[in-house]
Amino acid sequence: MKKKYVGAWAFFENDYQEGLDKAFARYRDAGITHIMYGGIAHAFDVNEEFYKNTSIDPHIQINYEKNEGDLFGTKSNLINSDYNEISRLANQYGINIELNITPGVSDVIVEANPEIAVVDIDGNRSKHWMCPSNNNVREYFYGRTKDILTNNKGIREVELDVVSLNVYDPMVVPDWVSPELSPLAQLAAGNCFCDKCVEKAVKAGLDIESIKTEIKAINKEATILTYEQFRNMTDTIRGSFDIVRFLMKHPKLLDWLNFRGKAVDDFVIEINKVVKGINPDILLSCDLVAPSFSWTLGQVYRNQPAITDITKLMLYHKRIGSFEAKPLKRVQNAIPEIKDEELLDQYYRLKGFSGPNTFKGLEEEGIGSENVFYEVRKAKLEVGTKHKIVAGLVGDAPATPEDVKEAVKMAYKGGADGYMLHLWYGDAPVENTIAFGEQLRELGEI
Image (cartoon, rainbow, N blue to C red):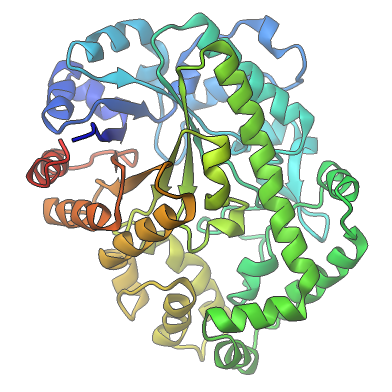
């Protein structure tokens, strides 16, 4: 049996409080050999010579993570710890501490450098996303990667967390974004029209003015917030065939969606060159959302074998509902006549998901574990047999040990080449990590 990739996205603050020896022993017993600590990139020193080609100050994010923290909490203990000491201890348990970098997402960096932000069709600048086409952004992440890999030995993998192109995170929708009817929101919203993207598109031969006109029209239609308009969408766009019909009606949109994918891929290709130029044995992996909707962020699975060594599919089926319900509920608040089941029926049909028929149920229960099988299966067929798909599975509450085991079985059935357990939200039950290892062992994967 070939050795499978088994890892965890771990939360250092919890492991630190528990005791690293105890945490590492539990990971070892679960067959975990790779650990990605959230915020690990900010735990390394800054050597100024690597940032000469960017005006972004790396200390901004480091100080923010240390003192304020992000969605996943503060990283003060991680940032104040010595990576080499943590790494040596982990190695004693057969574990390697790898490098996770999150390119493009930082409220504090965007606030300090608003010119690097993604810009929507109406000229609104994101407060969240940096544009991967912006040279200032690219040079910052190239420099940070070079700095860390050059000055810290023992890193075997660089993981790019959600390289994408969007105006805002569709699952954490800010108040300034108007509610939008699905699927028009996913098809056209979030497109970046910053100067760098427009310049790149023109060089690629795209008719940018026609594309802008088309996307403006689609966005306008998506924000007609009446029950009649909602029924028009749900009655005429009921599945994949209808999406094809929609794209035939708007052919320029397909050009733009492909361009967004290329813009994201170009960034990954350059990071790959940086990593392999330092050490060709270091693996480069990318975290992608599920194939059903990865294209909305410019993430294209079929291109992954040419630009990465490993692709990690993130579908936290028990957690996804609390995020996915938010934009749907905003539509319902704008159009009170819409019932939960009407919005969810459309949502499930378009994404191919199955789950509860109320928002309360979706938020508390997530989607069914069978969706893990289908998304892993789709991803594996997209990338082919030679490229590794690592299934990212939820280990945080509300997931129970049985939920974790069922997700592992579904990923295995789907043909996963490896497994990652997500623990970044913090306070994940230790029983979930144990269950993760038990199920992998039962399947003969470890």
